[in-house]
Amino acid sequence: MCDVSEVELHYGSATDVGRVREMNQDAFLAQPPVFVVADGMGGHDDGEVASRFVVEEFGRLTDAGCDSTRGAELVIATLQACHDRLMEHREHKRADGHENWFAGTTAVVALVVEDEGVPKWLLANLGDSRLYKMTDGELDQVSVDHSVVQELFDAGEITAADMHTHPRRNVVTRSLGGPAFDHPDFFLLPLASAERLVLCSDGVSGMIDDDEIGRILADSPDPRDAAERVVAAAVEAGGRDNATAVVVDVVGLARSGASYDSEQQRMSLEDKLGALP
Image 1 (cartoon, rainbow, N blue to C red):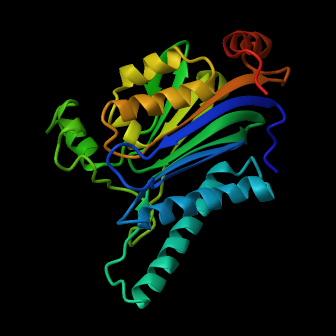
Image 2: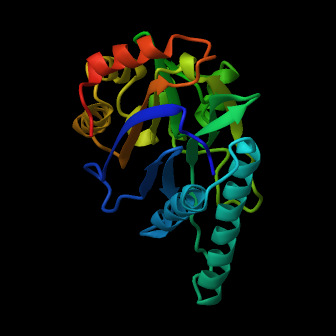
């Protein structure tokens, strides 16, 4: 089983259908040591099927237990299982006469793993849902969007402002549900480098900019409030898409040989958070 006895986490989550969509095709998992946000794509309830598969498969890691030293291998195997389920479901739908049936989903994952005997964050992403870290009040995007507009921006063909209005801003270049399995990007972070993690769908990051997300997080010491306020702000800004956020705080690290003052970290965060159940 993933051993998180040395790591104390506080977390919150929120999701909203928004003001335009009829159905919420986002899904999330907040079940230590695993946190996931998936943004489904497809007509009617098809995207909901894809994002639900992601949450169900990653939920198995906590239900059955997992080896915390094999984090990347487990993430890839779990994403592959999601892909396989989508392919099987597609075959059933097309056999029933739905020849053009398609469902896909993005996925961002945060998992506490053991690396060289030290607990760390293993982060993974597919698509344009995002992973952020916040330390000392500074918000930084960790993941890089797998999207057409990100590629155009990297090539110098459009500006950062253009990315929010470009006609292909919703086109992703990697996701689950395509004809071939797409591998995720991985990031391995020391716990001390990420006092707070944020996982969100593009219904958040596409509606409010990083400065606004950072301001809300800085003003919301309780991660439950932080998640709810970030999603509410995205809906208030127009809510053109489903909006989902998971916020995770590292509260304490018990190991005596930790590379930072875990007792001070705990005291500092408890001052901010107050007593949580």
